Image (cartoon, rainbow, N blue to C red; front, top):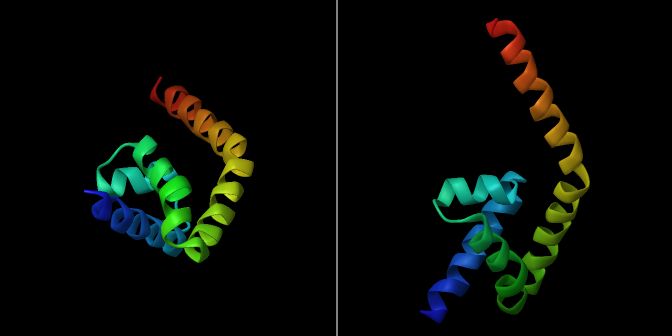
Length: 86
């Protein structure tokens, strides 16, 4: 069981780095929860593959710094769709 988690964390980390994806996008792609993805790529990946962890951490930090912009854009699009539907 433990081996599967470590292998999964590397697979998730590689996908996240290759696609510069968000935790939410990775979770949707692999049909697992965001919490599981986050735990795998932050805690378990650090123990298994520190080099990959460093690349993942860089992307996660970038996503965190941009999240307020993404949320604002999503809200703007939501209200534009509602306005156009009327």
